[in-house]
Length: 491
Image (cartoon, helix red, strand yellow):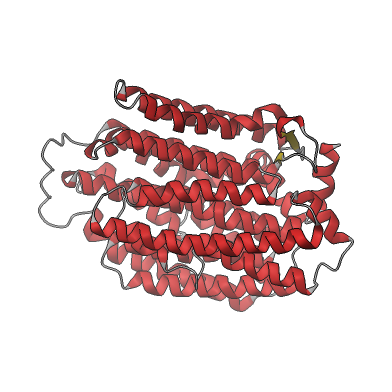
């Protein structure tokens, strides 16, 4: 089973390079390659998640070179949980793209770039080497630069350039942090770093400096306040599939997962870092919500909403108890599904304005909005409730109160802004020339995500929780015990 880990990277990377070869003579094959590639790795992600659900750790040594000489790919319950979410969401987005992307020229480039993003994201999730984490992060980021500019308008280029500059700054912080860390522990293997730090002063000045660099770098990737300014502009001018990928996958993997993995499993969570995460979480929740309330552009509203909702996840990481982490990881799942749904819904209305008054569009958008707002019985309600209860149990009453107020505020701005757009009060808009109702692939994608948004609470049932959530939470709670598990598997 460990040998299969490499295919999570190889399959989408191969598809990304094969698609241009068939672009001129068999364009239909480009779409098939993208769909087949994502379907294969999604099935593989589920299979690996089931295999490691009992606490197993899978290790694959690239080129059969042992660590520390070689590079290892590591999959445990946490990375498997994120693999399932990210690859499933990407599968739905690729399906949606079958009809949506036809209005753009050179659609094969869109599919090739999507596969590059998938390869980079999966690489970040499975690498056991912190420098290769940076490499895969850059692969995904560079592909997204091009996707943000795919609309080929002046505003699209401006948004893509802004994201590229901000992302490059973030990557510089990350690379500098890796360089300083390597000079301190003389290894790039994350399990090796964790082991080395147990023999050193984990709270020393070097680790404090590296932690600050990583908080700035990965915090920018996660769009935490005050590192958030790139996100609303980028989301407002790109094809709808791109913010769905960014909000549904990238900010969770390149920001939340990377910080969570490093702070909990490599450095070991320190009280001072916990307090910083709580402060950043509150700023993101509150300021993201306030900025969303004043938006008239739905895409920008959804962008600021993502900033606010990421705050809930970092609130859970900052509290750090087992219950809080259950809520935080569950909120990653719910937000990935619901926010991707809302962006795809906006793209559907933009592409087919006549669909705005159709019940299927209205009710799927309503399902996504309810989950983001935390309205029962949607999954978003349960994840927010768990986080709030965890705050109360940990003695953070004020933080629990803020989380409740922000959630109520979220309901206000979502239904203030989305009601006239999604329910189209007044005469329905005319369809664009050539549009013939809702395409099957787009309709199926939004309906599937809407059903999951409403029904995702079943993940909390014992059998489902044991298969998905429990193992991932135990990895974070185990802290630097990740090192002994990974090193044990390596031996």
